[in-house]
Image (cartoon, rainbow over all chains, first blue to last red; front, side, top):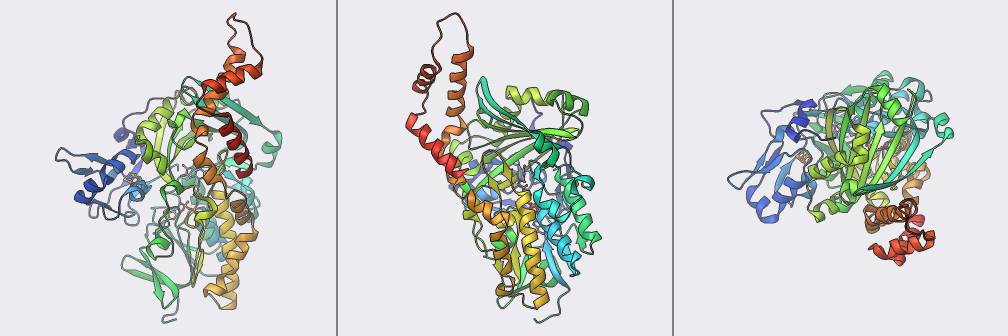
Length: 95
Length: 432
Ligand SMILES: Cc1cc2nc3c(=O)[nH]c(=O)nc-3n(C[C@H](O)[C@H](O)[C@H](O)COP(=O)(O)OP(=O)(O)OC[C@H]3O[C@@H](n4cnc5c(N)ncnc54)[C@H](O)[C@@H]3O)c2cc1C
Ligand code: SF4
């Protein structure tokens, strides 16, 4: 089965977006110098990370499925990541 | 204690471990609050979906009659996948069907039901609240902080799942190594029940579990699963983080390759994607468990590293439930004695060690190292099997050869060395 691109794939999921408090912040300098940038861009199943035209890592935090893979693969200090505030973020209906 | 506690017990996380612990303790008359960061219990949780029911049935003897599960799984298929060929083992057993020893589940439904049972037993369920940290007074953990609020209890149970941030942030657990973790990616695909029953040759109550290894994950350590639900399929991949990083592949590309793999494609075709999710899995086995009892705190379920990947089965839910049972009886005893120090709670460690959880974690303690080192499992062995079978079935008019010769030739062509095969075979038998 050929799945739609990830952005469309997430269309079936329910998300409650926390517009006030993004739960992911990238330290651009460290992410680049430690290789964290490439690692998290490749590993994220939701393609939250991409390389922006300015060479920085762009973060689509609203699409995060909260697995924590990026956090585990990141070098210390390169990525600030925590669970969204209570009640926000992805809400699985199946799981 | 400086302040009178609000509850006997605070349980952090309404997954299978937390809901069962809350249910058990509330049933014994203790005051319990179950805090969950998701909008509703289950809404953050994802598993492949085979629940081995032995432990939950000790808590809810009529589980199979009352709980929302999908299908009883009595057919297991194990498949070695190669580019262009696959070799499978098909295991079906009437004894499994009768026992209901394994069922497929969807966590948003199961965990919601479990939380209802806890609530029915008297626990207070508090969804939509994220616990940020623990409160410590001297050595003793006495409560939790959630946003502006503080809640106090005699005992805190950390049932917060695989990332185990509650214990990690408090300096009580260390960051796992990449080879001790895998990322699971899963699609839930809707399919007409009549099509499921036809395609998988099952009736309306029963179902199949596939475990796939090899090319379907582009050789990355881990493997695929495909489970039948009532009117959906759970189709996913588990990829070890160290190998994913080493092979420099994109997770999404591997997942797309998996769903397009001819066998998987033929099983899901005509279906419609209804949910796409991902979640980490513990892969470190017994070595990951560490210390689980602290003054005023016990750690259960995935947060305690309790998952077992034996190659054929991924088990986490039955262990999480087993640990919740072990912890709740120890916590109850400690509350009754009025001693919730680490010594007072140490019954948990003992209960766990003597239960199936501790014993199975120990039995399979060599499985992680084996699954990491036996790289042939993720590619060459499957090809070797297919080449041997090809020798038997590809009748094209050329003279036939004895199986032993075909096997020797296949082995010669394969990067697998006989010594390696023998070593992995022996190690595998001991580890799994
Ligand atoms: C892809 C995949 C396939 C799997 N397949 C199987 C399988 O087939 N069979 C099997 O038995 N196991 C399987 N597992 C493992 C199984 O899912 C876990 O072992 C099980 O879910 C552990 O239960 P738990 O209650 O310990 O943790 P979880 O189910 O993760 O529950 C933790 C809960 O804590 C909440 N929480 C976390 N932090 C906070 C906080 N700070 N404040 C408030 N709440 C918080 C979470 O939202 C969540 O509800 C699989 C796992 C994955 C990822
Ligand atoms: S937590 Fe998982 S889904 Fe979210 S950004 Fe990180 S890798 Fe992607």
